[in-house]
Image (cartoon, rainbow, N blue to C red; front, side, top):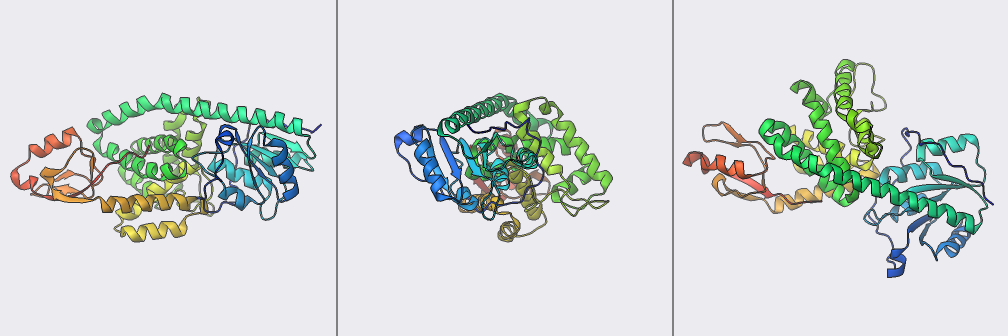
Length: 418
């Protein structure tokens, strides 16, 4: 019989070393029967052990094997995620705890199991803290025991996914109601939220569409919290400028106040964790010179990184940097796991440029987005960059004088990424 070490309630992890390389290689094609089975990824540098695991498990699970952390990460298909990942503790280039903590960031719904030949108290604590491990199994383990644990892990995965779906559905209506009412009350804030959500959505649609709602809600909370601060302070935080300790504390206080209601909801942990990661003081910063975490900084889930990338993208464009240069700089600074997000953002900008229409203001249509500020003939600002055309916009245009309606504009269609 094996020894199972069920961890206590997972402790929030600190910054783990990054072992991810660029994602994008799809999972191997499988038959119809295999697709119906729970997907399990087994990672060990011992090929004979992997062959034995596959032989013992293949009747009940769709088993994929990998001999290194890099190969395992390349096999991830976030559109068809693994229910369970089993990793050996000792592997070349990356230990099991580091690897599973990376899996936790990229695929948080996947249940993680650590396989080891020598479990000490310190290794168990590290596994719980950094990887949020579901079980630690001691080698050797008999097939019936392993299958029993895997069945429990699959059930854990399904329950986590079910709760996430329930949370997403529960939030859809209030978010939609908030989004529809906000433009009339605070148009500038509504525009900031809409642009941030649009940018993070195109990234999450490629990297992890099932977690796009986390980026949506995180973006909304961040901008609502910033609206409670002075415009100058909010702008400095958004653009990543240096803040004093007092200024940074005020930002943190506003965001933690905004997230407080969600902290009572266990299934919303991924949202408040994402907000918290945006407030973490980057390594090397401190004292009276602090910046928000930026692209390439360690820590944070994929939704949090997408929000962070959207902020950096907007800040650089706002400084007058050309689009191509902004994307090049972000890609150079991005961590391996962020590069897939930057690539998705770049692809969306290329598609937008290809579909851009340059027309008189009078010819704009519903669900088109302004690519630059639109001013009346006498210079008064009518519509800001990023504004999405709605019924009120068309009514406003009809009320303008003929000269203003002839003002040239550039627009692109708003397409759903969800």
